Each structure stands twice: as structure tokens, then as C-alpha cells.
Length: 167
Image (cartoon, rainbow, N blue to C red):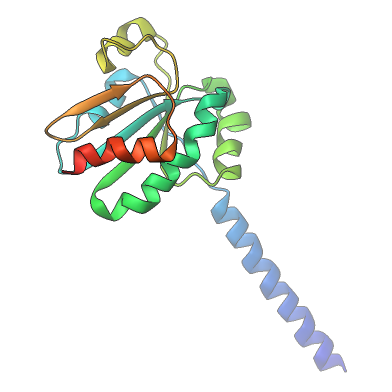
């Protein structure tokens, strides 16, 4: 009887330790912070991929609503040299309390970076001369062309825009 109790206790400890390690690994989310000069290289890569760069925030309802479309697109096209980058415009002071919990809760797999450059009047027109600064906004580009959209997307619309870059 003591052997059975000992085996049971060891089994419980092993399972408990594995679950703790998995939870710790799953909870490790880091979000790099960029000013415009640090972000700029992500907006002009010429490496044969198509990049979809979405500007969003957790406090923006249309942004949050469209995020599943970007995640679905990432999953479907990641093997076809398509990369999704989600540029959060959340407040830097709320990364730990809002942004990281949001990423975990919604299981975002796309690369998420935080834009911390406060000089919006300088960097917004560098991304697109036609951008008023409203979000959501999306830049799609490859080494040959780019397009900027100051609007939200449904999945089918987003996929149709992406296909123009895959030709």
C-alpha cells in the first residue's frame, strides 16, 4: 500500500511540474519597443517576402475585431513567404497590464511590436503621406510594390489584397 501511495505521489509531482513548466513557457511574451527609426527597417525589407504590417491598439474596437483575420492569414500563408507584423500603438505604460495579457488571451502568433515614438507628426507621413493617423491601418508590401489602407478588413478582403502581391 505504501508503494502505491509513493508511486501516486511521484506521478502527481511529475505531472504538476510539467504543467508548471508549460504554463511558464506559455506565459513568456515579450514585446519589443521601437521608435520610428528602429521600426523603419520592418517597413521596407526586400527579401522576397510579402509583409503585412497592421497598426492597431487594444483600445481600438475595429482593430481588435479585425485581428483574427490577420492571424488566419498568417497561418494560411506563412509557408508562402508572407509575414504579418502587428504594430501596437498602445500606451507604453500599459504593456504589462493590457498588451501582454491581450496577446496571451487571444493567442496572437504574429510578431507584435510596440511603437513608442511620440512624434506622430513626423513618422505617420513617412509610412504613408495619405495616412491621417487613424487606426486600424495596414501596409502591405513586397520588394516590387506597396499599398496602404486606412481601414479595417474582413478576412476575404484582406486575402484579396494579399493575392495582388503574390502574383
